[in-house]
Length: 223
Image 1: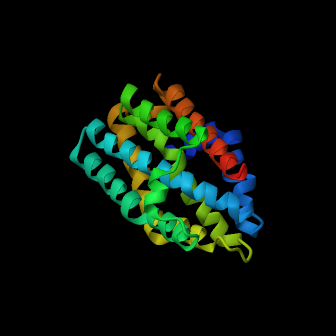
Image 2 (image 1 turned 45 degrees about the horizontal axis):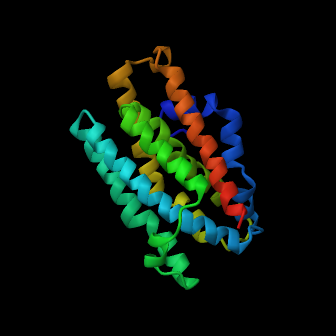
Image 3 (image 1 turned 30 degrees about the vertical axis):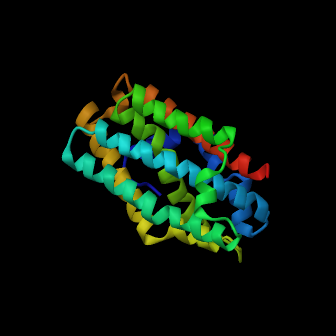
């Protein structure tokens, strides 16, 4: 799954971490149905809180943008997160007797705090590209994972999760984000961004966010 030109380069630069993230035991447990329900629910609660901060990070990207197209793309992603992706969490948890008010007031786990604050700090201390590099592993990684699991998942109780991230709405978001990142890189760093002195730092941002994704899965398994 390419999602543009920049994403495959970042993914390749973080190859070991990327495999650890996208092939994590938690992910494979969703694929074959062996993931304990308690682990999944703990993950969903924390991921709901994560998406609250993730939406704030995309809103921050609106203020870091240099063009109206960038602003519109970031604002559209905020809408997708708040009004589409979070619906999965609310509906699933409601069937388990967990209300949205309880989700919103739940305590954040340390790995959640570490990841969300890292992303927000990347945006506050850096520029639009720093923020995109920190945001990309979650958005595009879930798109890649969802697509793979939809193609080879066994009968599993986690079909709703897989369907959300493999579905056309989320996949459209991934392609739009990939296009946004490519255009932002070309605008700021030129046609060959990997030749820029900034490139190693952006790759490091992407890899760190990927490693924090690994810790996030692990947090779910600790339930």
